[in-house]
Image (cartoon, rainbow, N blue to C red; front, side):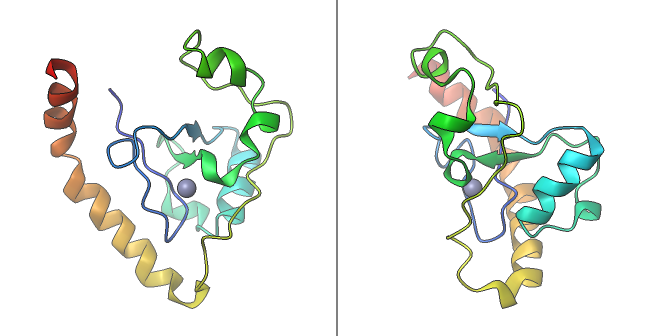
Length: 128
Ligand SMILES: [Zn+2]
């Protein structure tokens, strides 16, 4: 199980906290990646190009933006395929954008703190 977290500031969805959410992986293509991160109001420099970064489904019109939504929700597919040109568009959750800087720091701390739990949570899920 890969630990996924939403890069959008003020959003704390992770694959552990909200396992029912879909996490869309941010494209590795530099141009598109930069665009997505800017939309999320994250500094593209904060997230290394080699990092697997995600945004949760809340920022998409997921049924329209996903090419294989039906297959995925029916369990046939493990990979989320986006339609060409799909972009995250929903950021209503970012109510107070003035706090952006501290929120960025906070989400990074939370990520580091949570990582050691990943294995534990996976095991619990498997053996339940
Ligand atoms: Zn999110």
